[in-house]
Image (cartoon, rainbow, N blue to C red; front, side, top):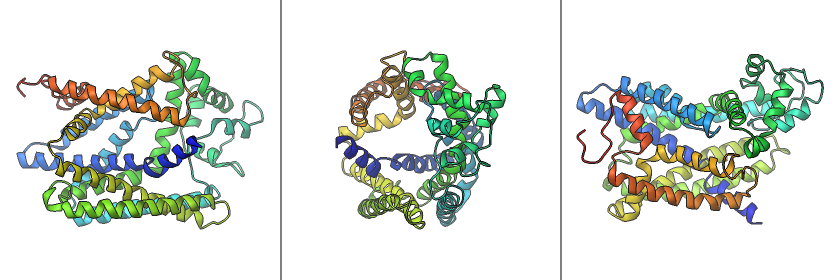
Length: 400
């Protein structure tokens, strides 16, 4: 019961909300940096492109060495695509963001209905694929052309898996067997096995599927963030307090109603063809509504308690966000992988959720202490130094 309740709460209030918020913030960051560079008469494009290339490299390294669900490299690529949009006027940014976002949802729905029989695409289920390939181990049938292929199989056809089998001269079945052995590899396997598994999962599966199915929505959210900067919506707090209250209340009510409606439609998707559209609209409109509600609540809290200890502590976590993001993967590696406690696949969802609390609390304390002595987090410093191609002063009190 506790497991089901935790999963429901996470799905309703957490899942999808923070990548959405992060996407909007990333777009706001792009627009703000461009605006400040223009005000100071400094070049922007070259520095920003270098920043994103460095972030791309950090992301790929993170994805291969620690976590196959890395988001950094994907965001770096989308940021480069978003760069030309920064010159658009506010109205054009809003129209572009809405058109891209809704267009991507419609395209996903059409693809799901026509190619997947109403199912939504996702990462391959390796065990399921092994069952579908039950024939000879050398079979290399293209899942896109296979009659009655599952959603998992069709999604595989949109990845680089065929390329992996050719480059490493292995059959599809051998590759699927290796990938399906995930729990043993991460719980008991060697570090080299784990890197190989992450390489296939991250570079050949996760990244291509994100680029195909998620990139347009994320780009739309980047552009929405630029729109907020052009309108100064989250920059001029005192003037927009009424707007924040409206965003918090309407976003919370609308978001929850749409998500609950979408969840109900998901249960009926096998019986009614139209249910997939109710689900897609419910979740893809409900999630950003809730994300903006959260953002409005944070801004309101900061406006009322700008000097409070809580705000300062959370700000420290934000100023070392890159270090903390990668740091969580390093910490979890020692908890879940074979070179640490080997708990991969052994914790329930509730136990994993409870484990996240002390990790986050520890990072919060460490971030506050670190920034008392240093200007940046370690990875933020490296990122900044490589972006400007000049070693940046690290200690507080050092000349910039």
